Image 1 (cartoon, one colour):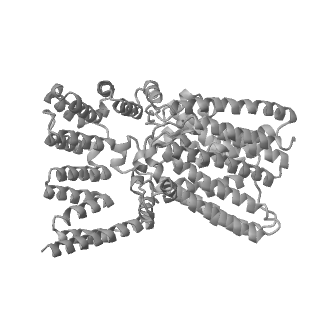
Image 2 (cartoon, helix red, strand yellow; image 1 turned 120 degrees about the vertical axis):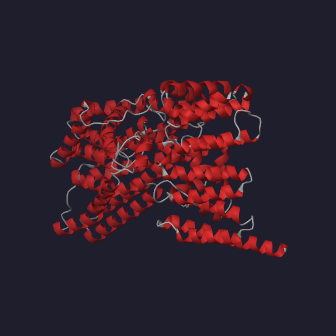
Length: 634
């Protein structure tokens, strides 16, 4: 019974985690969920499913494996996020099982006893599966990309450590299976999300801290194998990070920081993550954190302390990894896991789900230290650890319950983080959904008064006033919004707001806002330096204006905007819209000429190129069919 107790306790932790996460059912789609999933409505057969799977724009690969899992749930898309969240919860629990196995095998390979290794694996996974810090990885539907990528990394790790156990008996076979495990796990993980690139680095950390060179493998062979399958992938990641260090001007304008400033800021954020892992009060966690203060100088005391502490810890971990392997494991695993998302890649600064696998390193190391210490420390630890899991579960359940009540959570996060644009826009969405337009208008007015840099949000205010009290909307307010747009920060949701305002203005019931007014507002944004230099914004801007001109039946103006959009970024949307506009209007030659050009502009990415070719070929066939119809009608 004593031997089974860790397994039973782990099973209880899994059940407890499942119950806690189930409290989030009932939540709304969050952040990029709808943008990533909306095209599921078009999935009706195998061809449309394949189109969706290879339509991804997130990351270089488009993340087709993640989209595949969404495509399998296409019929559940319009029923809300619950079905997707249930799959997310299942993936998280499966990841906990894999993590327990990987940790157990690592400590068995290290030479620890079977009972101790099992205990370390079960405790590590029990704490991790209930950790509130990483809850958003499961509670945001689209973050399945991160948890699925982690699943493939853990499968790769599990296969790696299982293969390594046979290295003394059959070294060649073991090395081959280890290589296959790393390669296969990495490829699958990368096709779910790019963090899969980190799998060989996690293995390198484990080899450098916990494990030793196998006695059955010669030093030269081990060095060669490690160079190819561990060090080369690591150097590729590091080289990539160096290659993206110099941000283009439009990225600096968009993000508000350069690579050096991001590094300094992330050095502090990594400590914040650890503090929240230690004390995960539900009120400290969440999706809608306030704006992170960007560190502009190394000479800031807090920045200097954060950077110096990480440098010293990293140097010490590498230098004394054999003397203090558990400390080295904690530091290097955590830092390795944050290499892509918390260094110089120009992503947003703060997201708690980035700790999903990185935080497992410190948990594993601390658990092993306590369990492998003296009998007294071990006894105390085994009494305290269940309390830790229960406290974690309590905070997790509180947080999940809040997310499961969209109305309550919208108000809570807007009060908790009144300066968060995302928290306020989430509140706005709920106010509008409930028909509380007066409250929504007041929310926008109050927020933009305190934060004029988010003046573009006032486009939504104009739309709400046009729909509910058009006679009260004076031209002076429109002029005021137009002037503020010249200094507004860039965020892409403004394009959807403009299109909605255009639709409202098209009805002719709002004297102060005509369709021409909306186009003037769009041009004002286009002239804003923060917007003008951003290629993707400019592409979507001209695509938006083309849509507006098409609705006004001005085909020539719409085509002109589509050409401008294509000059900024050749996109499938532009190619599709241009063809659908030219061919039915009778300009068969123009449609074919544009498709010829698009065919020459095939993306270099092989996955995206496949979808691009399919679209171009389908559009060629469409143009041929239109030409045939025109000929027959004559």
